[in-house]
Image (cartoon, rainbow, N blue to C red; front, side):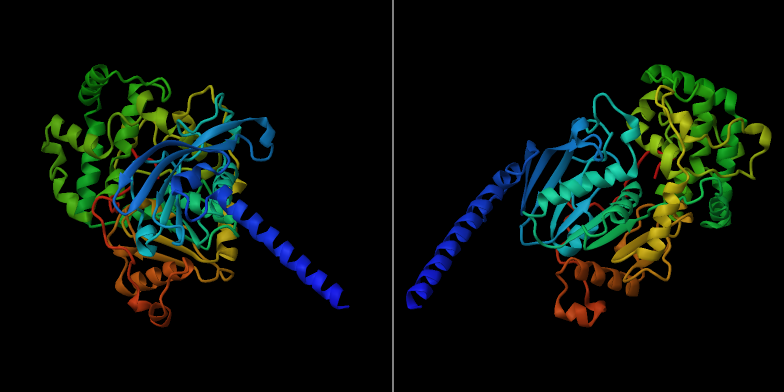
Amino acid sequence: MRKALRWLLALMVFLGTLSTAGAATAADATGGTDVDIKDRLLAIPGISLIQEKPYDGYRYFVLNYTQPIDHRHPSKGTFQQRITVLHKDVSRPTVFYTSGYNVSTNPGRREPTQIVDGNQVSLEYRFFTPSRPDPADWTKLDIWQAASDQHRVFEALKPLYTGNWLATGGSKGGMTATYYERFYPRDMDGVVAYVAPNDVVNKEDSAYDRFFENVGTKECRDRLNAVQREALVRRAPLEKKYEAYAAANGLTFTTVGGLDRAYEAVVLDYVWGFWQYSLLSDCDKIPANAARATDDEIWTSIDTISGFSAYADQGLETYTPYYYQAGTQLGAPTIHFPHIEKGLIRYGYQPPRNFVPRSIPMRWQPAVMRDVDTWVRHRAHHMLFVYGQNDPWGSERFRLGAGARDSYVFTAPGLNHGANVAGLVPDQKALATARILEWAGVASPAVQANPSAAKPLARYDAKLDRADVEREPVLRP
């Protein structure tokens, strides 16, 4: 009996030694704590280095990650998707950020990253170049495929960054973070979605019309409406100016169907673009008397806010993936212009189909946004939505139903498409900050007991922390 016990004990020690050795080997494979973080990242299958950029207090890497073109059929080819890693410490929480467009290759810290003093992984949205399969099968550009991109990146990095993870993004990035949570609700410990539109019924857009009837002040609305109308009244001379501008800058208009269509699209974006990116205080920059303004003054005001290059082929090309998604799943707004006579408007708000080359087929899928909306209303958990009071994209927003748990929708007074937690009223700002800290697993006992004590854990860094609006040429979220 004693021999048997001694033999069993020896066997347990031996097996324990093997287990420890195996664990050490596994740790070395992903990079133990004594291995440089770059080596640990590059040890992950599918990750390769593009470049490393220095930044005090962090390591910053621009990387490629090998992704399946079709997550349902991974054997049907791969493409390289860019990601960036702003590394602080593997023991800190990680914020997973996407703009829904291209990824910036310069170090930057989003608001939740500053709040939790964590790492940040940023992802380029599939089909935005260079993260585009070649050849491009556009049917593989949908919100589920994109969410699956995020899921694979998370699964690859989670063994290294073992703390809590939060998903975040602004505008289309906020939509992206929401869709990711809908399809992979077990990945993230929380979601912070900024100014995320939610176009559930694409043909019903009266909420936008109501917004433009009431936003700001009557004086400001009248100024903007007058300039917009005047640009259509003076269509002939201003289009001659546009022709010269296009020739000087090598602009063409094949996709949209001609300079006249592009001109009207830019002009009709004007009022929307102002409220998306400007504040009420900026109304002083708008010509006070449009009828007496010179052609150059009207042109400059429209160009400054809308941008006359936006609907040229060269301006549209970068955003083809967005317009494709807007015309197949996301939806796009349509508004009316009661201050403009019908005879001055030839095309109205044009559909996304007009901004995508005809060589790319598109098919509208009406059930997709309704599915996400229903899920958020009834299943949202640890989700925070932040909107700006004067942002037109917030007219159709995500809302919470009885099934939502520990989730919130807040509106920052007076703010635009750059609304953030810092711009909320004090009690909501404290609560939002406290919940973000709690979801990230770094809330102190004092914050847990009293949310009003919540503050960002990292100091503001003027170069690293981006408080500016994520500006995309209008009309894009």
